[in-house]
Length: 241
Image (cartoon, rainbow, N blue to C red; front, side, top):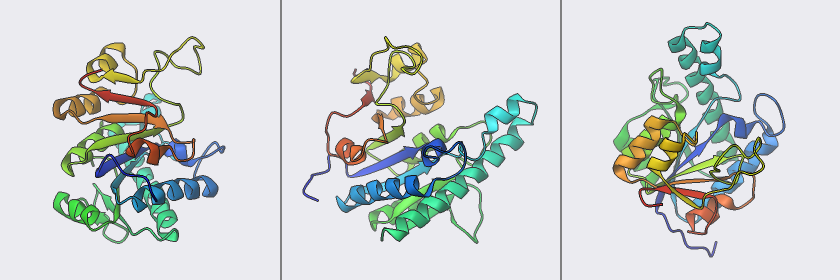
């Protein structure tokens, strides 16, 4: 591709719900193939790419714990759901000729590598896409926190949070038609306004290291590449709004 990447190494955060397409549950083959093609375009720019994928399309630990299930047990089940999604995304990427590694925070040697920071960095340096699964390996932490943690561990230049909306709004745009979108916003404003972009611990981690967060619409073709190439897409979260 002729475009020039603004970032050398990024971490892409994809929700489990993004893999459902128009279904109400599970993984839609057409949707995951389309996402894989977008990541392939990103990879072809020479951008070192890591991914954290959620598990909400299969299992939501927080929702089940709210109904009486032990929170730790529910969170571990949610972690396993992220592994299923990671394997599906790995298959979709490798079908497109993109070499991929799945690394998990919970060891399961038969299907994935255990997360080892230096090995993960080596994989991305060699041009492999690395998918981090099973969150942080600890209950009570979301995949947003895992994304922030892994991004810092591999020294990513930015987090790209792919969502179903165009960016960060003053209110939920599906419920409030007067909501307006921010082009830029500070970490502190996100926390103070309780905007639910990522959980507070994830935002705080990024704030401490001044790691930019780009929030954008995954469903607009080419958006991932546009963000990486420095185009004004979605909302950027930094220390300076």
